[in-house]
Length: 387
Length: 101
Image (cartoon, rainbow over all chains, first blue to last red; front, side, top):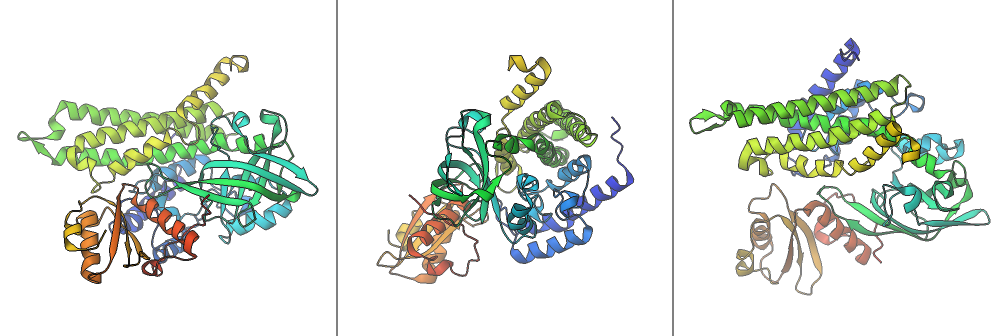
């Protein structure tokens, strides 16, 4: 694999790196250390700059108005965009725009008109609700929310858990059991958040102290049949379709944080003196820095390899699972070692390390936990009959 | 408890959320002591005491999740009372909708 960047990739990487250093990092000195939102005026100003750079809506497919960049380049940019305090979960505080709800790219024209295009124009907000109290890693079996047909409507009952943004959204993509147990009995619906029977029951706090999830309840929520996405009982495929692809830039974001933590560790080791000599002269510290670099390079290779396979149209499920597993776990180790090198300062909110440490722990669970990534790889390597 | 010098002096410097209410218990402000608050909750409540004087009450919760807990308290207040407390009207906080069971 050739990892030499093209001239265009080099230019994009350098411009995003400059944007982070010049525009994002200075704003963080005035924000709460756990903040994940900018002041609206700053946000609008930076969104305008990103639009002028031609990079707004990075994850939106070209046919829907996005810049149409390949996945390798997208990952290279993700590494840059996460190199600031809020960068893991709020890269550049969202000024590069979101992807919308990817499932809506496969919706019918009527649904796109009513939901996708307003979402991409920023006029409406959406949420994605798959996980339930009964589980999230195995949706085919865990989904207990039910839907039955009543004339031209469906009636939904059930609870969804760890749902981001449902309290602020106008609508959401959700999944309910409409048939037999297993993956063949699940249907995907678009639900309106202002409909009777839609309730946000509670806020769920987590290690991400600036971002909460919610628990939502459907209590005889009536959904018109025209809001069924895809085929009745065909929802599982819709839920799964983009999971593998999403894991690759998800891994890349972790690498950016690790790169920044390593830079900080090296700078501190050179500067800080103990017992009459810089930390950098101590073998224990040198080895931690070397181990950091090994972790970062392994994660970067695997992530870019997965992206390159996806760009070439080759099977990439195993490569994506491996990248996700390695990058999330490696970045956690890198930040942990960097905190150790920083000593007491590394534990404080004066530095971003403690925030990355907390947030990276979630990355080993989000988008499929490490154990599920191993299951995916084992199925591909050994064969389906051993699953 | 009463917003007075003795009660405020007993507070620690931790991060967390707090509410200030009038003598009748009507919540006037929901706020937090965040990562940049000098002296944490004690500093914030000292500031409230200096601004408001006597006759007010307060409560605090020590929590590292001060940002999300602050939003949650505001959302619950809006669900119960139809709007934010008077001291939060100009916050500019974008709040979600809740319908607690």
